[in-house]
Length: 155
Image 1 (cartoon, rainbow, N blue to C red):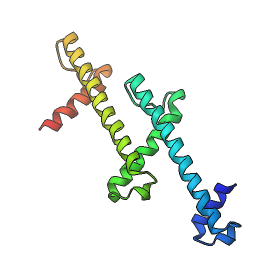
Image 2 (spheres, rainbow, N blue to C red; image 1 turned 135 degrees about the horizontal axis):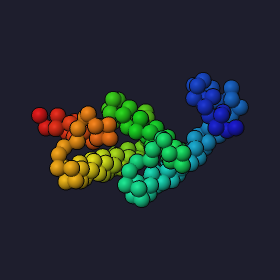
Image 3 (cartoon, helix red, strand yellow; image 1 turned 135 degrees about the vertical axis):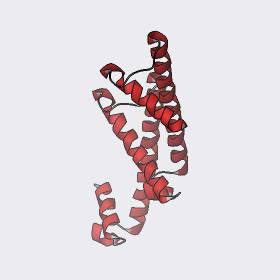
Image 4 (tube, one colour; image 1 turned 45 degrees about the vertical axis):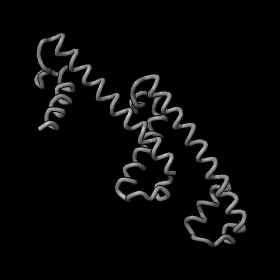
């Protein structure tokens, strides 16, 4: 109920009386809310980090048990993209500088990990078949697309 009042206050500006709270009460609630958000954010971040360490990949939306963590991760990535667009105003996206740094670390590790996995797949494919994957073979299209994109980056 108090959270609802805080949201009303944000919508209406600084008219404390209109929501039945004093200015001091609003400040105290905001402090508790911020601490709670930091705590729950840290827990979700730890879950994401543990998931990626255990599985070597990001959670997927197509796996029912991973959807909640995927949703949280997706929302954080969206905030990071907003930050890139808006500059370094952390408060405007609802993250602290430390949270942004932690997310960037996970994102970079994930990119390195997924790139390495795809490279290993390509290497294994070429060793097994003695050729590059082909776009005309349905089962090889995904790997071909990744390989093609990497070659295009080198040009």
